[in-house]
Image (cartoon, rainbow, N blue to C red; front, side, top):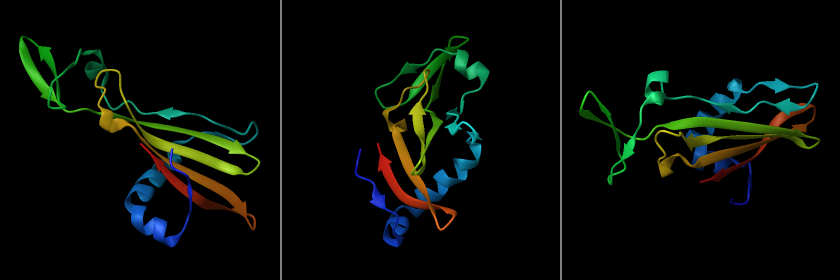
Length: 132
């Protein structure tokens, strides 16, 4: 994992689209202040019917499933995966993607790590780092 960088204007300018997209997901976290616990979150991008299918990889990065003797072609689908930690120093949130069991594309590996801390009684974003 790369070293985290201080949250500067230049860092934000370089990665603003990713940071804003990831911050949008912060509302999906369930935080328990009394126990200082943050529940992990995993989306399920595939419908229940899609989850039941057996997918087979092709050499071009696509996948297919068979239904009624016909092949149906699809691209990989990533799941939103989030976790967090509360410590004496602040809150760290990991917001990224991972492959699902049916379609395991390598492009799904990636995380944005957001580190928050208290400054003058307010929760502030201190550092942002990227992995994957």
